[in-house]
Amino acid sequence: MNAGALGRRAMPRQLPSAEPQAPVLNLATVYEAHFRYVWRCLRGLGVRDSQLDDALQDVFIVVQRRLSEFDGRAELRTWLYAIALRIARKYRDRARREPASLEAAREGEPELAAGEMGGDSELESERLALAHRALSALSDDKREIFVLARVEQMSAPEIGSLLGIPLNTVYSRLRAARLAFEAEVTRLRARTRSTP
Amino acid sequence: MNLDDDDDSVFEQALRADLPSMAEQNRLRQRILAAGIAAGTALGTTNVAAAAQASFGASALSKLSALSWPAKLALAVVVVAPVAAVPLVDEPVPAAALVSQVRSSAESVRARADSKARFGRAAALPLDATEPARAPELLPEPAPANVAARAPVVQPQAAVSPPANVNAGAAQPAAVSDLLAPDAAESSRAQLRNESTLAAETQLLDRAFSALAAGDRKTAQALVAEHAKRFPNGLLRQERERARARLASNPKGE
Image 1 (cartoon, chains in turn purple, orange):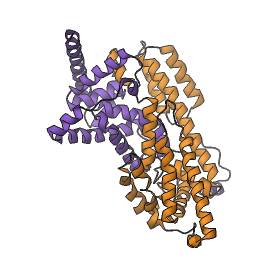
Image 2 (cartoon, chains in turn blue, cyan):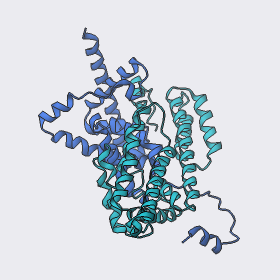
Image 3 (cartoon, rainbow over the protein chains, first blue to last red):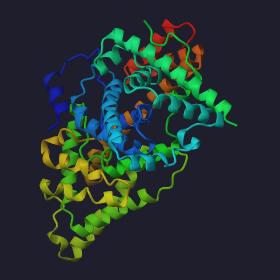
Image 4 (cartoon, rainbow over the protein chains, first blue to last red):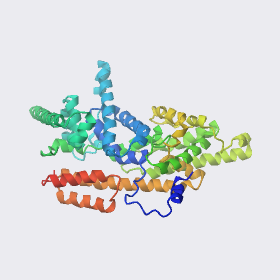
């Protein structure tokens, strides 16, 4: 049945709506517009490079299942990050449960090369590698809030509702996370300098 | 209070710029396509109009499911072989290109099925037959040939919920329906228009946020204004307002 045609018959003289109709939102368009940011978010949240593809696919399987429920009240990107956050937690937990031998084997796997990460200079890729190492030294709570606020640039109220914590906690935790991140960066840089 | 009160460190900027390269993006697209998510085993949609396309896509799917096993196998080979053989180049693969790959593959399979029907006992293969229960048989086939060992994860969903016709409906079903009935061509084109609009919006706002991060207020303002002019009610208008708020709240630009 053609719903559009029915609508036109029911309201033949209706003036055009003041609010233009939102474009069709389907999985293909959502994927195309956002998968790079979801990828970055997952990586920032501690999903290993070797599992990034699987995690990204898991996110979009959930999106596929739930997209019809998305009502547009939240920003689409915030909604995607909420899914990514849960998937990343699942992968982190799984990684922690892995036997030590398997974990050691994964640690030995080559990480993405600088060119593959999109970095276009040696300095940038060094900074990025150092930033990821500093991130991995943070606790899960701090890491999540740091990535959401400082990397993905979500607002404090968005983060509060996403993580289910009060606004004051968002600010205090973020402050602590930034201090911890900077301290770790300083420590890593000092170590790099002292290494011949 | 603004979360961005303090200056960004170069390390935070590096994390923000950490996006997959073009080659990586293409690889991820291929993987998702092979997994049958973006390819439309059951595409989610928030728009009722798209649901109309969806029912058509599902009927196309059931037509394809009525093909014989050899025809399905041929479809899997023809669809997956080019996908698996695509080299990772530093050029983005547009969604339209992926859609056309599938379309041309499906056309060749349909031609084979037609000739088989004409000359052999395959005349008993009704392309119009509706066997929704057999739909999932068609889809797992591309998976083994590509990286998508996990593709079957999405199959049960398409199989169990025929009303999920409502959830189906965008890129791929439109493309398949395109070849089975001319009416679907228009919806497919509308789909591609939306994709390109969103891509353009994303690109503009990406550049605006990058300019903000680099402290280039002037460029950021210009890009935000351009977005507002070109897409006053765009899908990413809230992102635009966020960029605007950041411009207004922080005279330094970040």
